[in-house]
Structures are given as C-alpha cells and as structure tokens.
Length: 610
Ligand code: XIL
Image (cartoon, rainbow, N blue to C red):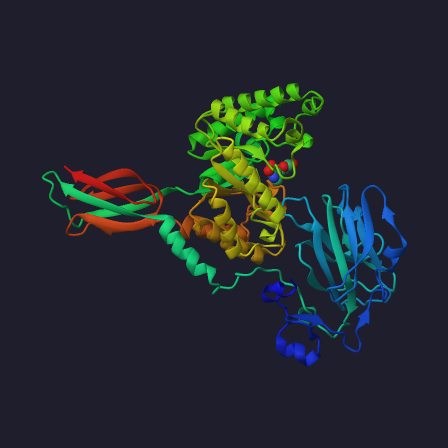
C-alpha cells in the first residue's frame, strides 16, 4: 500500500546537494521516498510526544470528536482520528493545535512532516481536507505556511518546507491542522516540525510534490489513448467534385473549417451571468462560453428550489433561450436530488404522508421537464443516490423508475441521465460508491427506466486517479450499454502545474474512450465557482495553466482545419475530428460553400459544379 506512492512522490531535492548536507535517508522498505534527517543543529519544535495532549483530553463538543488510535503497520504507532461532525463558519474553528517548544529566528528553514489518510469523506472528491498552518500564536496570526491539502484513502507522508517569517520565542508560534470542513473523518500521525536553521535552504528540504501514476511524458497509457482517439474521434471526409457532365474536377481549392465538435465540451454556468449581467464581467462570461463550449449545464438554476422561485425561473428561461439561439446544448441539472436539504422546504413536511410526497415529486418532475421540453438536450433525472436517498427510503426504490418514466413523457427528446460522484475521482478507490452506482443503474435498466446516460461528476482533490485506472472504470460502466458523460469536473488544488497536467491527461483519457460523449467542468471563472481554485480563468480573466491545457486540446489539437486541392480523380480526402464543418470550394473564379456533418464513421460529399 505504501509502495504505491513511491513512483509518483518526488522530492524537491537535488540528490547531490542532499548527500552533501546529509538531509536525506531512505525510509526502510520504501527506497524512493526521501525523508528529512536531523542535522546536528536541527531542533524539533514540538514536544517529544505531540499527541499526549489528545490522549488526556477528550474533545466532544457536538462539532467534532478526537481520539488517539493505535496503529501496527506504519512507521509511527499512534494517530489522531478527528471526526468533523458539523462544518463551522471558518476552517480554524476546528483544529489540532501544537505550540512550539523552541525558538525560531526569522529566515530559518522549517519543515513540517506528517502522515495522513482519509477514513470517511462525504465530500464530492471522496477526500478529507486539512489546511496545514504554521503561524504566530496570537493576533494577528501571521502565517508562514498555509497549505490546504486533501488526502487520499491510503496512508501517505507529507513534507511541507517553508521559511520562518518572524523571530518568535518558544510557545509564540504554532502548528495547526485546520479541520473545519464538511463532515469527514481523517487520521493524522507521525507529526514533526523541525527547524534546520538559517544555513539550510528551504529549497533543499524535501517537499511533497503531488502527482499521479502516468504523469510521465512517456507513460504507456498515452500511446494507447492516442490510437483510440484516432480510431473513435475521427472520421474520413471525402469531397468529390465533378462538373455538369460528371467528369472529375481536379485542382479546385478546398478549405475545410471545423465549426463545432461532435463530442460535448462544456461547463456549468450561472443563468444570471448570461441573462442579467451587463457588466464587463458579464460580457466576458458570455464570450468565453461562446469561444470554449458547445454544451453547458446550469449550476444551480434548474434545481428544484431555485426552479420554484419565479423570478429566478424567468432569468433561467431567458438564459436558456440565449444559449439555444447560439447553438449551445443545455443539460438540465437536476430533477430529483433526494435529500431533504436539497428539496423545497414544504417537501419535508410530507415525510409522514408517502402518497402526498409521491404526488408532490411526480408533479414536479412532470412540470419542470414539461416546461423546458425542447430546450434541453439532457436531464439529470436523479442526482447522487448513493449519499442522498431520503425519498427512496420512504417511497421505495421503484420511485426512481417512476421519475425517469415521467421525465420521458414530459420531454421525449432530452437524453435522461443518472449522476453521481466519486466514481472516477477519489483516486478511483471508492469501491462502495462504484458498486452501488453500477447496481442502481442495472436496477433502473432492468425495471424499464428510460435511462440513457451515466453521469460521473469528476470533482478531484489531490488523489488524482491514474489515467489507466480511469479507463478501467470507464470500461466497467460502458458494459452497461449507455453513454457516459463527465458532468462536473474540477480539480481543487493549489499546484497550478499539476492541475494543468491532470487536466490534460484527464481530458485525453476520457476523450479516448468510445463510450464517453462529453466532458463538462463545474464552472470556469474564479468569480463564479464553488471551488475557486478549480477555475480556468482568474477573477481578472487571465487564464490559468489548466485553462490553457483545455484550450490547447479542445480548440487546437482536437480541432480540424485544412486546405488543399482536389486530385486527378476530383477527390480531396482528409481524416478529421467528428463534428460540423463548413467546406468552401474555389474553382474557375467561382466559389461554393457547403455545411457538412462528419460522423465518426466517415462521410463522402459529392459536389457537382455547374
Ligand atoms: C453545488 C453548487 O456548485 C453550489 O453553488 C451549491 O451551493 C451546492 O451545489 N454535486 C452536484 C452539484 O451535483 O449540484 C453541486 O453543486 C456540486 C456537487
């Protein structure tokens, strides 16, 4: 388990320097992972047994609980298990706190090291969060280290090097693990904070660089993915030009311009930004949609409570019309999200009257899907059934079948999806979630629910699923015989280069799989994003490396434009990405244009010149 990480955990240290200053030593049984060894002058900033305080004091204040657990298979023998029960207003309201036991001088090189793993995490990434902070122990809590990280399900060691920003005597600085996030259970052990003094460079200390298997430029999955993209995403386009007598016309000039991809590339959007925002931000928001996407989904506007708000409904319908007018497909999200907190207030009051509850939901499905009939390409009929099942608990599983059938009656043209999280994300390791999803989909299909699409959200933290594992998961779900779509992708991490790398590789792996029909991110602008780190454009609209990676693939590498001439047989042949094209022919001083849709099976276009 431990070994798995060795291949993609890299140290920031140059081996030569390391050996010279003697900072590195191999962990037994895991030669690839460097670990800081104290120099003679290195000072530990924490007590010899930092967990002692947690063994004595039992925290149980309704918001979180902490206990110390014993471990037998790790290089450390005890860990803190912290359970966050309720998210406080600010992350630091729940935190493990360690005061320093020794002084630090401004400029000293410090290193915080620890092990952590996720035990439970209902958040969409399937990963628990901690923000690791080293700060002045008192107002104004000046921070020298502030590293929000999400942790995977296997134990992993983290090294966070940084420079002391101030001179503080013992007890005047502190290390905190902030835990005030959504309910989760995390374990943290092997905690160390070392002071290497002023003569060691921070850049010479070990640093955890997060990564994933298959990130390497020569990773084997890349060749296979490129071949599948060539096979499944392109078609042969042949243009055959003849004159009025049927004779081939050679040497005519041909310009092929791609207009729209057959594959769905999209994002979540906010209706108000489209329909009601006349500011410069609104203008750029709309321009970006037109430039980057052929499909969108409303982030919140079609959810049941928002839909029942009449003012918001008018804005949303106006935005949907604008999108339709601009040829952008719209997905509906979502008809039923079966937890009380996502439902209109009055629905919970019906929990004691199952018939009234059933009717209220069914009317809603029929009303919303019916009102939007013809405007939407797809509907998420059911969202997150693994975690959110209050309605099924009362009405039974067959209610889900009913919702799909009613949606189909109300809107016969929208493709009907189920949607859930932690299928591709969470390192691809959330087996319980995956198994449940497969069973639920199979049940719905067996019961005759008109389900035609499998939505996988794709919210990522640091546990970035290796591309070859993504393909395995897709193969498994492809066997259910329905289209698969990534509906809510984002990567909520601070390392912009890693974010860009994984954006590129995630898109490539997904685009290469023949059952996948589209990829949508959950927002694109930092100014309107539920996880602002995940945005492609900063608040000032400058593009982040991940956004650049998206554009390089979607608008350049996977986009076909070509120019040429017809040959002696009157033909011009090209292998091009499936999609809509405008073809312009120029011959004898005259020009003609044709609109052509190229499917992945290929197309022959015969043009007679008269
Ligand atoms: C989120 C929105 O982004 C937030 O603005 C809102 O406050 C809560 O919902 N899975 C889903 C989405 O299916 O509907 C969620 O959207 C994100 C996780």
